[in-house]
Every structure is written in C-alpha cells, then in structure tokens.
Amino acid sequence: MRIAILPAGGEGNRMAAYRPMPKQLLPLNGGWVIDYALEAARHCGAWPHIIVPSDNQKIARYVEGKVGFCSFSYATSNLLASIYQLRPIFGKAQILYIMPDTVFEPLGAAGEMLAKLDFPVVVGIFRTVTPQKLGMCVLSARDTYGERYIVAVEDKPIHWLNEEPFAWGLLAWREPFWDCLAQVRADNMTAVLAKAIETFGPLPTVWLNQYIDIGDPEDYERALSGGW
Image (cartoon, rainbow, N blue to C red; front, top):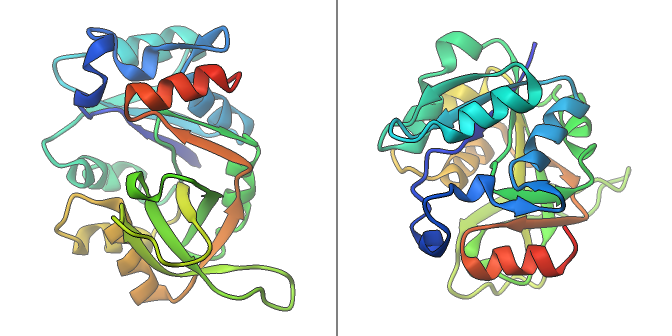
C-alpha cells in the first residue's frame, strides 16, 4: 500500500494578502498549487491523505472533488504529532510525504523514491538559492555508482558555508522511519532527518530538477513568473 501524506495544517501567516483562500488552493498553471502534489501521488499510485486545519476543510473538499477519493485528518498544534498519529493506520504502508504548497518537477521522482525503499527513508533534493528558507543537506562524495547520500542536515541556516546549496523537498519512508518521528520533540522534519542519519547512516537521494516552496508572496510570484 502506498500513501501520500499532504500536511496542509499550517496557518500560512506569511500569505495573509491572499486570504481567505488557503495557499494550497491559489491558482497556478490553469489549476491550483496543490495539484502538483496530487499529480505526483497519482503517478505512483499513492492514496492521498490530507492533514487539514480543523476550522478550514476547503482543501479536503477540493481534493475529494478533484480525485474522487482521499482521506483526511485534523491538524494538531504540532505538525509532527499530526503525522505520527497516523502510524496506527498507515504504519505498514510506503509513505510519500509531499508538502501541498510546493511545486516541483519531475513529478515522476516520487515513484523513483518509493522504488528505493529497501532503505527506511529516501530524500528528494534540489539545488536552491534560498538556503535560509529551507532544510539544507550536506552530501557525500559520489560512490561507485554515481550515487550521493545525505550525511548531515541543517534547518534554515542564516549562513550556508557548504559549497553545494542542496535542500530536501520530498520524503519517502517505510516502517522503521516512524520511530525517528517518535523520538524527535521539535516540530521540525529536518530534525527527524538528522535523527534518521544518526540511526540508519547516510540517507539515499533522488534529484529534483526544480522545486519552489510557496511560503510567502515572493515565492508565489516566482512560481507564476516561472511558468508553473
């Protein structure tokens, strides 16, 4: 079983100019921002599960109307807790973790990540010019097969001194990774990746060609002007 978890529980305070519309439902490329996450899930046959704010079910209703099937749960004040409460339901599944307020390509990278899940967690990474906004990754040298692994992570650094500015954008995991979620107190998925590195060793990667995390109006305008 494959499940795509789309956590849409944030308040989106930096996108206040576009309220009351959730940023996941802002128009983009003839559709909506969340369509990129849904299409990636569809490509790899993953059932979409949306984590939504208890006072705003617009996103869940949109997804139900678009794909005809989905499930959803309500967000708590802690995103990791909202995700971890799904373990009793989805603990045995292959999980694809996609932020529904992002746009990225290729969409097929999600399926490539799931195909690598002989390891407990696989990370989709991309090159960025805004390390201060993202979870940054330190990569190993290429191995015999040309693969690179994440050996350390840092969340939203003020200064990124590593010469390679790669951030993580997508995750795929299977059952052992849930224990890392349980062990991290901070409400921060980059911290969970750090725990995974400590537990399992360097993390395998899949490359994303482009990725924009729409966290503020500037990011949204960049997506619009970039033809997304």
